[in-house]
Image 1 (cartoon, rainbow, N blue to C red):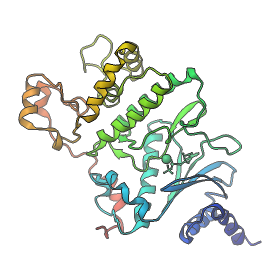
Image 2 (spheres, rainbow, N blue to C red):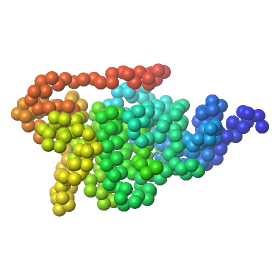
Image 3 (cartoon, rainbow, N blue to C red):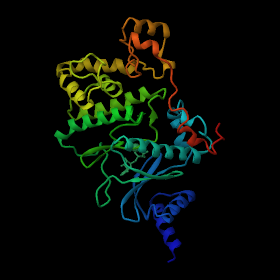
Image 4 (tube, protein in one colour):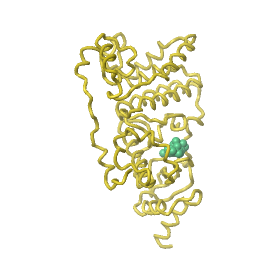
Length: 359
Ligand code: ADP
Ligand code: MG
């Protein structure tokens, strides 16, 4: 057969299990033509918003192709991630599913890059074209995908170290990548080579997204629940939240906030000094209160200026859950706090080409 017929044949394989629309098939064909992929094999996962396929590179390396569905209905309920996200201010068109999906795929690519740049365990993103994201495959040499954390068979002794690994990863995600996963659970973590790999970050939000703290709280609750069910002594939601968001972690015996101690040793210390088991009921109650408490995110939302300024001036930041995470410190440093508009349009401008037809 001619080269192009051969290429077509390979791209066609992807359509055998799940129907791909012609445009997506063209994208796959071009990827074969450019030598990005050589062969598309079976479907690893069929989801509501995307299907994931196993593929091979020309060098026979295993790849994962995440192909986002382009049906308009699927992406409707994603609005909550988008509102308040300045990257999506322009060019987010509810009426053009192809463009919308392209933005999600590109966002996942960018977010994966940020995770990898911070040294976090995640698939390596290789290329994105419209609704198709190519990334490294997490699995064994025969092409079997790594299990989701939910399905993984974890030796009892592995659970506590994995819990610690996850909290440290979330702290790095927050402070270095400046992201909150926003859909973290045992479904979006793969257990690969004895470690946890974070996946599915297309909906992850900037850490200054108005609802970032709400998303983070949900992420942490899922993590705490999962490992608590496996008998791990966890920090408790409130303390876990503090561990992830605090700008500076106090070293042992130091004044709160004075030092930025090694996160791992702080975590181990907090876990060791955590409430004894008989206090768990009480902790659970604290968590419940904490879950209901509104945690404001941006400085715009933060201040009931009179009340909060007075409290800070008194040196009393109890109840200002956000004070440390925002870098607010009572008294002295309070004067200098100004709203800052980070990130400006550094990456936002990427999205703005030919995307003027938003609603
Ligand atoms: P969604 O949940 O939106 O359908 P995910 O990114 O969570 O998409 O991927 C769905 C499933 O596909 C995952 O649970 C996992 O089993 C599999 N998967 C995703 N990415 C990879 C990868 N890089 N390597 C191996 N399997 C993957
Ligand atoms: Mg998922």
